[in-house]
Structure formats: structure tokens, C-alpha cells
Length: 111
Image 1 (tube, rainbow, N blue to C red):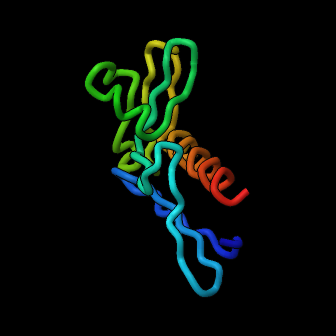
Image 2: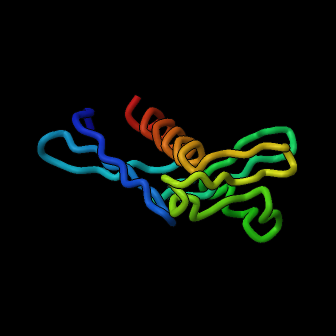
Image 3: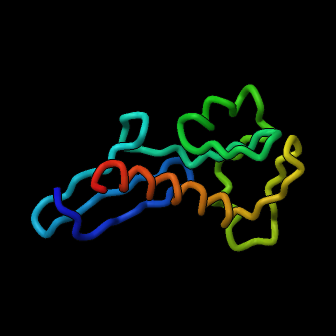
């Protein structure tokens, strides 16, 4: 599919992207093969960022360094803490990580 328009739904639980070439719409596949990117971000002790399915796997094992549903806090002064890395991130910064992941998926799919 040639590129035309890109639509992104930044959701509270999941996010997705679709390409529209003027005639057809195609959902963008994620690196894991699905069409939904969980809106979940994890930051490990070294500051490494995981997004989506990889991050969601840590929701139970490392909940203090893995954040979901942060979109609900957007527009507030609330920051999300990642104690292992000693970082505080605004919800907007976490949303930007999800968008960055989706952008990478689009690049992988259509160049």
C-alpha cells in the first residue's frame, strides 16, 4: 500500500494506526504481529524503555516500573514514577513513547 494518510488512535488501553491511500484502509501491524499496541510503558533500572506487548508482560511482575492507563492523567500535574531508574515522567511523555513505537511500526511496514 502506498502511503497517503495516517490515522492514529491513542487509546487509554490500546492504541492503533491505519493507513488510507484514498481508496483503501489498512491497519498497521505491530512488531509482534497484531494491530493493537497496548498503551503500556515500562522503564527498567538502566533507563531502557519498553512499550506495548513487551511492557504489558511486566504489569504483574514489576508494576511500580510499568505504567498503564496513564492517559487518564494527561493534562494534570501528575507524574508517573519509575523508581528503578529514578525517573519521573509526565503522562504526555509516556504517550509520546507509545506514539514513537507506532511510528516505528509504520516505518517497518511501509518504509
